[in-house]
Image (cartoon, rainbow, N blue to C red):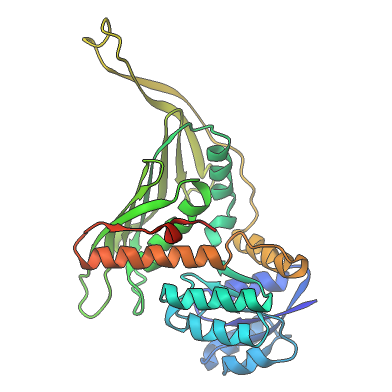
Amino acid sequence: MIGVAVIGYGYWGPNLARCFAETDGCSLVAIADRSGAALARAAKRHPGAHLFTDWQEAITSPQVDAVAIATPASTHFEIARAALQAGRHVLVEKPMTESADQARILVQIAAQRGLTLMVDHTFIYSSAVQKMKELISNDTLGEIYYYDATRINLGLFQRDVNVIWDLAVHDLSILNYVLDSPPTAISATGVTHVHGTPENMAQVMLYLESGAVAHLNVNWLAPLKVRRVLVGGARKMIVWDDLEPSEKIKVYDRGVSLTDDPEQIHEMRVNYRIGDMWAPQLSTAEPVLVETAHFIACIDQGLAPATGGALGLHVVEMLEAATRSMNMRGQVVELGAAQRRAS
């Protein structure tokens, strides 16, 4: 039985704690948080877990084999490094670290010690993203033209990361997972409307090796919440609306075809195809539960995580490149071969 400690019981920590408590093969043995109120809530929900105000005590507890980190991004590196050095397997919330240099150190320590290092890119474990990957991998969509994502809402304003690191990070991990075409360059623009806080809205463009493009629209200052992704292919197109209670994925048999026939070109060079729409059946399994079960299986069986340290590093490298571009008002930043390699 693998003993798990959850570090941080604020916004995301309670979800991780609940799922680890429900996952076979492990036991939630410890919860750490500086807040007495947070620990009081944890005590009611998980009376069997030991409570700590000092995360270092939780990590060194002899009952703990693995650590799940759900703290601000600025603390990820310190806690994850200490946990790995103490011989603990690590699941760390996204983004993995504040810099690619920090991420490389964690990957190196985990490899040297033979420990599982996994990043909490939860969407990868959702049935919607799994279905998208299946449809793209089996060439249902044909050649991929574009990936267009909108993630907007009112708040939550972060103090230690901008809106790209908070929201666009999801699509950077999804792109890496579902498309067999790494980005070669990135461009981003952004602005803040609240003095003293990071950028609260941004536009990101990624240029992929295949010639496809990805556009990400992220915003903390929108009047409504939208979580919608469009993937356009030569044969079919996908609309993924994560806020839909059912039919989150819809596949459209729509597109355009071009003709160079001299007899037809004077009429219309572009022909539009309007076909059927269908919504594939998706699993109702909770992505976080799928993720925690995968983490435990990787530890128990020595498997490579779907969202391992290499993916976490790759995503942080793209986040850094996007931030550099944003600081230069959208100037394109080229990604080197090492940065383009997917995990």
